Amino acid sequence: MKVAIIGGSGVKDSPTFKDALWSEIDTAYRTTNHSGVINYQSSKDGVIFIPRHGKWPEIYGPSAINYAANLIAAKKLGAEAIVATSAVGSLQRLIRVESLVILEDYIDETGRNQNLYGVGFVVHVVRNPPFSPALREILCQVGQQFKERFKGVHEKATCVVIPGDAFGTPAEGKRRSQYADIVGMTICPEAVMAQQLGLHYAVAAFPVDADFDANHEGATLEVMNRMSEAHRVPVFIDEVVKRVLAVDLGPVPGLKGNIINGNFRHIANPTLRATAEELVERYCS
Image 1 (cartoon, rainbow, N blue to C red):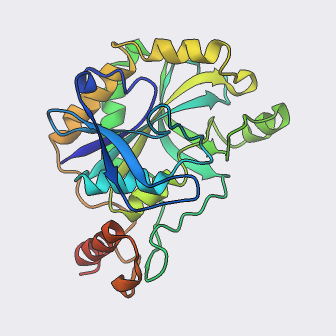
Image 2: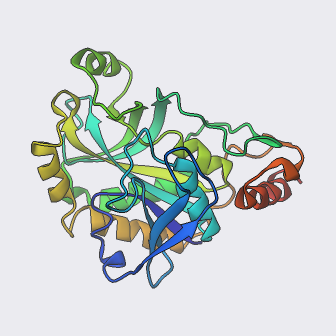
């Protein structure tokens, strides 16, 4: 089992990647904003780290991230599971800043295109459950092991995913608090695209502000720095990875019986074409 971490603050400070060199891989999945070339680190154990927003100084806001390219890079490098991290805002007083939230569900308000393969192949992903139960269980177990390092551990939270790059207005925050626990900008379409690639995917979210006071200029960055301390997010992620590497997560839920096989030659991207053939062989036989 090879694991890729897609995230940012806190993960890059992990001892796992302390001495890892940066490399790049061309996914051939280009957008108007993005070349399709992804920077990544690989540890001695083969664990992959992909910075979701790109490697400085080529940084992409949530609305401009090439989510598909990040995931294709992970797939091309041999990953079978994605542990995603996300800095989020809390919509509920019970979910405190500097806590750990293992997402159970999400609401997609981004309007971003989820069509990964284009023409010639369709994956009607069943998002019930929306995250890999086996991978999520590991996140929950490790979360309980390290619960003293966070200001609470929550395993039943729903995230509403907004387009970005602007934070919500007070009225939007009030409305969203009626149906969600936290708010973020990057989980969609990442979650559903990971499923379409046959990758196990789950999210560890870290509230860095209350939705009403989100502001990177102020306390939010201070919270992110505290969460990045070695004994907090980095050690949590390291332990998660160790456990994932030691198990077989089995088939990815939501794929069996939900793939419409077309003509692979219509899929322009070579990695996606190979993945489509792999999915048909595994989930349509």
